Each structure stands twice: as structure tokens, then as C-alpha cells.
Length: 600
Image (cartoon, rainbow, N blue to C red; front, top):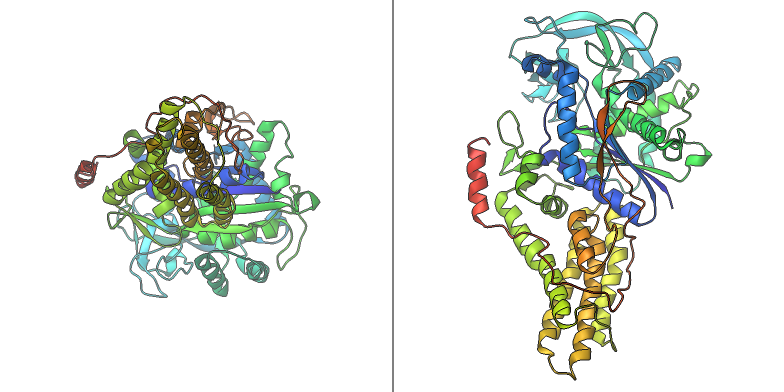
């Protein structure tokens, strides 16, 4: 068994997250982590809220609060939303902890010692009306390479090339539309070209990556440029060098500190367990980390940070770039095993946009619908490898036709018949070929579904699990146990229902990573006791180094179901079941579209 790191993209704490966000980083990472735990691997799933940068500062000013107050507000909102979805983080923290500051500064110093961070005088974009630095992403203009008229100051979303804001044609501020002023300023740059050969060699040995991720990453290596890692800003991690650390106008750039969060969160988790070095089992490139695997989950707009920039930081700190060097006190660190990037989820044919009110926030969704209904839609129809459109009509159809009429119907009618006719799980008599065939289909699902989840093909995986459900429904219809009423037929009725219930149990295990809330309910309907699908808990935690406290997500995931068929015990009492899923009235579609039209 392996130590498996599930490194989940850090949601930005400038507002609540919408369902497009969690379809990229949230649900896929949780499905994978739950399966890997059930399969016996030692999983560490970490993330937190990304809380630095000019956008936070700009919004805080607009709201009349401090950046910390704004981050506190949305950190709690996001924690509650991810808890509602049942995302099983070992630690969901934040980037404003003193632990995070220390780890970021350690990597900065290590890279600087090894010669991979250098000072340069460059042009910085300043807002003429406020005198403040404009972040690259808050500057738009025409791309000088492909001519796209909405390129950002850090990257063109059309051609994928990295940019500097002064390269844009007709640059303008996204905040107020004014033309920025460009002034000379001194900053530190990461020497990305020094890692081109090492990253290229590493990418050449990546197997089973999604083709779009690998191709995009390789293309980026053709024109790597030094990248600024500090900014003229008051809000962020201080620069840990003499002459810089006490300056109030210079901070480490948010993109640099956010990717280091995977490591700092792992270290914080270890410290909270009482074993401060436990994180090394997932991160160390030395002997104790040989069985460690690291999977990074995000939307496609974050690929460059995880397949090029983060590996560069890890290589440079470990002394493995063109300039060599020695590893810092954290030791040599593992590179990602795989970057698992999802495409975009749109809504009713439009791109999600909070500013344009084209949005469905997670908490609003969970107030009206079940978490597993959303998790099912994302797994079965989400943007795994292609951009996908969320429509209310398709959501209602999948909920009613697949969850309710398919899986929910199988659970309800098989348990209802057994409870009514036997009051317990009946014993199985001699099995027919049809009985054996259905049981074989269910047991084979553990290999098939498990292999697909491990390869990040969750859409195919849940399709295979639902195929088991369909076969069981077909079996019940053909065997018609409700017709077996005589005393002579009673044993056969019991056998059919026992087989059906066994397949319900197996299918429930196959669906547990996808539908943990309902999986716990089905487990209990079958007479199970205890925890089947462990859930995260919100804990009000103290900062380990004396800073302000904050809520974290964590949990005990050592309990729960294993990835295997567990024989049912005849004689286990059964009661008439309650419906596991709610059927939605088709009028929901009109109501939600009307709400969307009103900008709700």
C-alpha cells in the first residue's frame, strides 16, 4: 500500500464558491481520496483557502473592512460549504497561518540560496487614481502573440502563453477601466528557464496523464521566462531577506505562496497529530518517501502552476535545477505523480460569472437540494475531459431517472419486500445460474470501478457502478419475488431477495466514494451499525504559533467500509425503508431558470 497525497486546489477567499469551482477541485478529489482509503492506502487530503493578493485588498477596501476580516468571513463560508458537500479533508486550513508563512519563507530562502531567485528591476503597473499596484490578473488588453482582445496581464487564455502586463496592447484596468502607469520597481524573480531541462525530462516520464494536461505542459517549456514572485503590496507573506523583511510595501506574490500551501498544510496536519515529522511520509524524496504518490486536483486554468511552476519550486529547493545546489532543512521533496485537471463547467450555455449573476453558489444549492444529487451530477456528467454544461433540466432528469428511479428504486423495493415478507435478511438457498451471474457482476465491479477511479476516469467508473444497479433491477423484474407467495415458493423468494440485497450492499460500496451521504443511509437500512462513510468535521482550531484561531475541516477516516464485497448475515433485522433520494418536480426547472433570470 502507498502513501497517497491528494493535493486539492485552494479556493480563493474573496467570495463564496459556486458549483463550477467544486466540479473541478472538490468532488473529483474527494471521490479519489475516499476510494483510495477504502482500498487500503494511507491518504493525506489537504487544502485551504487562498487569502493573499491584491484582489483581496481591493475587495476589502470596497467593503470597508481589513483584508484579514474579509478573508475570515469567506474562509468560514467556504469551510461550511465544503463540509456540506462531505469533502473528506484531513486538513482544510488557510494561507494566513503563521505555519504557512514560515514554510513559504523557508522555500523562498532555499531557492534564493541555490541561486534560483534573483533580483531584477522591472516595470510595475500602478493605478493612477489610487497609487496602488495593479495585479497582473486585473489588467486586460490585446495579446501581442495571438491578438486575443481579453488577455490578462499574466497569461492569455486563448493561446496559453505567459505574459507580463506591459506586453499587452492597449492595457486597461479591470477595476475601473483606466490605463495603468508602468513604473520601475525592484522585485525578485524565479529563474524558470533554469528548470526547463529538468521539468522536460520529468514530463517525458509521466504516464497516464490526461492528454490535454501533458500537451499543454510540454508546450509551456518552449518559452519559459523568469517570473516575478514579489509584488508592491501590503497584504501577503513578508520577504525573508535582510533589507526586505521589514518593508511594508513589498510582499511575496500570491501565486508563489498559494502552491506552497500543499506542503505547509501537510506540515500543519502533522503538527496537529502530535508527530511533527509525519508529513515526510508523503513528501520526502529520500528512502522513507519511496512509496509516496502525489495527485493534484484543479481546473484547467491552474495547470501551469502545478505542472511547471510548482515542480520548479520543488526542484530548486531540492537543488535539482541547472544551477544545482543543496536541499534545505525540509530535505529533497517529491514532485507530483499526476496533475489531474478538469475542464470548465458552464451553466445553461453561459460561463459562470459572479459579477454577471450567472452563478449557482454551493450553499444556495445545498439549501434546496441534496449534496449527493450534486455529487452524482458532477461525477456522471461533469467536466472531466471536456467542457460541460450544467442545465437544470438535465440535473432534474438525472436525479429522477437515475438516482431515484434506478438506484433508489432498487434499494427501496428489495429492502421493502424483505422486511414485509421476512422482517430480516432472508437466508439463501440453492443458487441458480441467474443468481450466480448477478453476484458475479457485482463482485467484478470492485475491480472495474476501482481501476477506473484510480485512473481518474470517474465518469466511466460511476457508469459501471450504475450498470450493476441496472442489472439488479432487471434481475428483480425477471425473478418477480412478489409472485412467489406459496409455502413451497417461500425458500425461493428468500433466495432471490437475499441475492438482491447482497447486490444492493455491493453496489452501495461501489457508489460510496461518489455518494457518501446516501451510502451511510443504505448501509443502515441493511441493518449495518457504525460508520460506513466517514464525514469531515468543522473544528474551531487554535493557530499553532500564536496567531488568531480559525475553523478547519478534518476527520477520522480510518473507520468505514473497505473496497470489497462483505457477505450479508441472514437474520439481520430489517425495517420498512424510507426513500433515500428525493424526486424533484419538473417545475423546478422553470423556478430555477426564473431565479437565474432575476439574478438570484
